[in-house]
Image 1 (tube, rainbow, N blue to C red):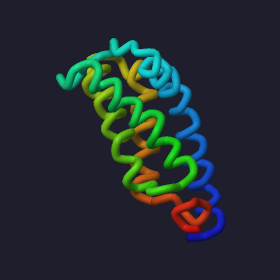
Image 2 (cartoon, rainbow, N blue to C red):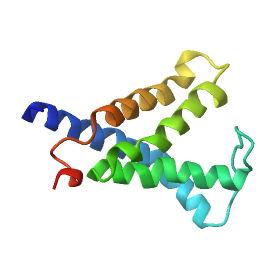
Image 3 (cartoon, helix red, strand yellow):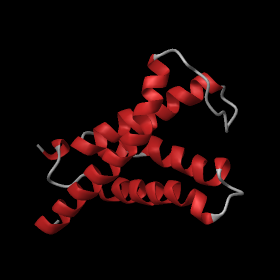
Image 4 (cartoon, rainbow, N blue to C red):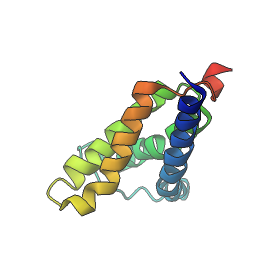
Length: 123
């Protein structure tokens, strides 16, 4: 890959993961405070759903941001954003599900391309 491609991947990883953390950190705080009320779109129970979304929106984005196990770390956010876009907001207009779709596309791209040279995976 070229230096520009590696820089582009770094910007994509840091930008998308950093923005995802703004959605995940409040859910992590909720979990740590013992409030397990959460949506249950795939029937696993609200507590399990909350734990899984914290993994997808906090733990995995941190790994992606720094570039550790990047390709594997994109799998939970991809699943979470697909569920958000197509199940939670499936009947909603495109403007409502657009954010989940944008995250979905970005995490798919990162998953396909990997972290690039400017990551801990390559150090």
